Length: 102
Image (cartoon, rainbow, N blue to C red):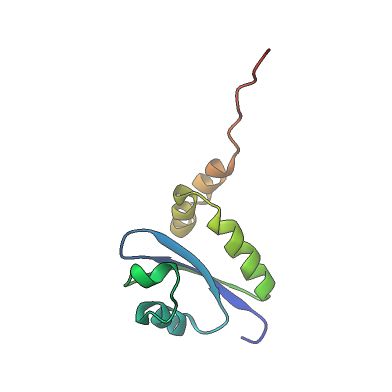
């Protein structure tokens, strides 16, 4: 695990999702979240549950994808979690704004 990292999604006790990356084992990282080691988003939303994880050979790729997923809608995150790539593609299509003639 020298160069790579995990991208993971947690479900918090309030039903919200947290997206993060870790170079350590996922079990250790989730324990840290549940122990309150991190004073960020999950600290007041414990316990958390791992619901998605993907390994990347380069930490930079994991971080890039973390940033991308943090900008996604809840529906897109849930499609990824389910492995529903057809829905994910549909949700990823940009909505066209109606043209304004003036």
